[in-house]
Each structure stands twice: as C-alpha cells, then as structure tokens.
Image 1: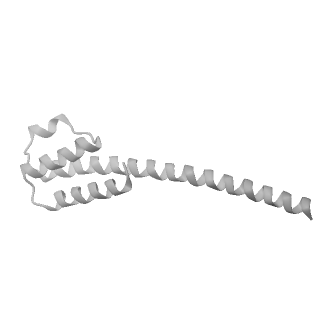
Image 2: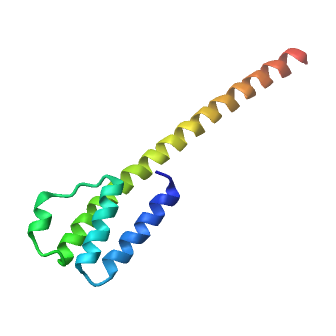
Image 3: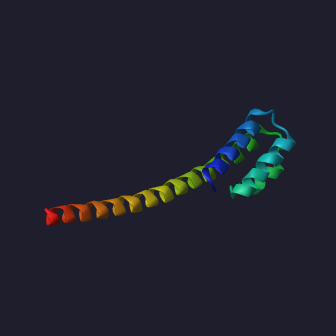
Length: 103
C-alpha cells in the first residue's frame, strides 16, 4: 500500500467518524476494514449498527493496519537509503585510494 493510499483511507475513516452514526456509516467503514485487512469481530453485527462504539472500534483496527503499512514503507525506504549510503562510502574509499596512489 502506498503512502497516498494510506492518506486517502485515513481521510475516509475520519469523515466516517465525524459524521452522525448510521447503518450506512458502519457499512462504509466495514468495507474499508475488509479492503485493508483490519479485523472485524463476529459480535459486531449482534449490536446496534448505529453505535459510535462499533464505528470507533473498527476505525481503531484500521488505524493499526495503516500504522503497520506505514512502518513497512519506512523500513523499505530505510533499506534503500542504507544501500545507497554503502555505495557512496565505497565510491569515497576508492576515491581516497586513487588520490593517495596518484599523488
């Protein structure tokens, strides 16, 4: 999941949380949860579908998944930065060796 997708999902979840609770809001947030892979407990449908508690519970699970995705993206970015830093340090060492040998 890209950072842009994560931002978009966070915005949608925020809009759902700030709107008045309804069955439609619960359905929208459940669709987002299924798309992101957030957990949906079985007891959710046995309670009032317009409950703010249910919407907030699902939103918390979605935010946890999004935090995990963002952390994964940060780790991938750090991996590439480390690789480029290693290449730059090798080039610098070669440059120093050539400078010492040619002078």
